[in-house]
Amino acid sequence: MPREQLNVPKAEFRSYYGRQILKTPVWDWKIAAYLFCGGLSAGSAMLGAGADLTARPRLRKVSRIGSLVSVLASLYFLIADLGRPERFHHMLRVAKPSSPMSMGTWMLSAYGPGAGLAGVAEMMPRRLRRKWVGRLVAWAARPAGVWAAATAPGVASYTAVLLSQTAVPAWREAHRYLPFVFTGSAAASGAGLGMLLAPYEETGPARRMAVLGAGLEVAASRAMEHNMGIEGEAYTTGRPHRLRQLSEVLTVGGAVGAVLGRNRAVTAVSGAALLVGSALQRFGVFEAGVASTQDPRYVVVPQRERLNASSRADAK
Image 1 (cartoon, rainbow, N blue to C red):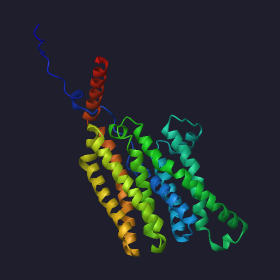
Image 2 (tube, rainbow, N blue to C red):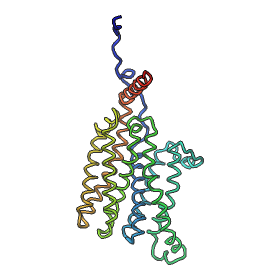
Image 3 (cartoon, rainbow, N blue to C red):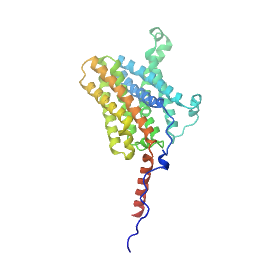
Image 4 (cartoon, rainbow, N blue to C red):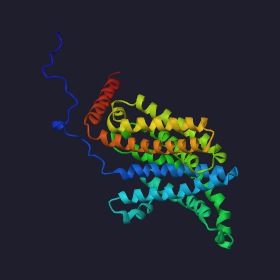
């Protein structure tokens, strides 16, 4: 028998009247700033603990204080973006392992006291250090700093899991790569802060951490761009692409400066480049997710690809 002729053309990926299917996230720039500050705090905590254990007091000081200030800024941006900021403490009433938001809240709660105590120990005036309270805080600073460093990787990466568990196409489909991008970015930014503010002779660990963090961030970012499906276009077009391109230039430049720099000025400029590059990476990822909700292709085309793949699997 002759094959049946189709009179209806093949359906395209259009949505109803071309309108977007998903709602655009109500989050604004404060969430991107929250992502950056949290990563910076985590990276600084790890570097501060290493500086403490290797007798680099000035690098330890700037890293510990930077970790405390940035985690406070991160909490401010997070709470300020909530619809009812005064209800933030309600998130601590339960612990739900299946909820990245719940686990992230508890991670921050576990991390914060260690980073806070270590940072406060560095800011105590000399006259207070001679009293018993000051001696107690100074004694507890090292274990507090080590505790903060131990919990810092979770703080650096949980926000990537949080984004990946949403319905936003560009975030959801990047779930294999975002944790590595964010962890590398956190290490690079923490190292950048140390390189910017500490004296050159103490920046050895910061420069090595900068190279490792920048390498992980750039490699994971490139892999994300090349291995994602159509959703990856959100990262390689428009404003998100420009932000992430500039981020990569600054991050690679900062890492090169960390290797080749032989004086205070080059090291400081390289550290500033790493900080700005890390911030642009977070803002680029954030804006790519927002952009992916505004184009129905990023929802319809992957759905149809999954349905077709399922149909082919069933037919075998």
